[in-house]
Length: 117
Image (cartoon, rainbow, N blue to C red; front, side, top):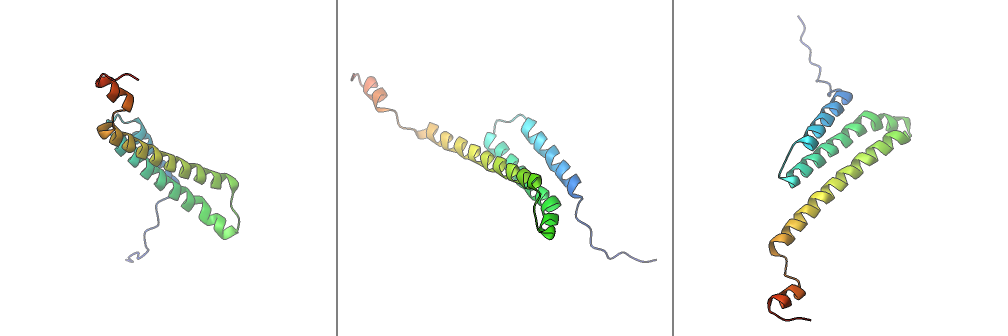
């Protein structure tokens, strides 16, 4: 009886992308009160999807010496969505910081003190 000493093959790229898309769908459809966490999970999944697409398609393109425009455009759209998601999370964090300690506008302070301008 012979024993196989082969190293395990990487997961099928198509299956990996399907799993990432399923996880992304679940993340996007799950009710949440922690929007920052949801956006960070979304960004991580988009990043995983970007690398899965690149591994599946672009390694072959590099060996051929040219890139398929559609595959490159898909990877760039995924990357842009990932960046936009992180920007949204950052904006929410920034606004949360403002709401806790934002200064009162001058006209409201004057109005509260009974000063009219």
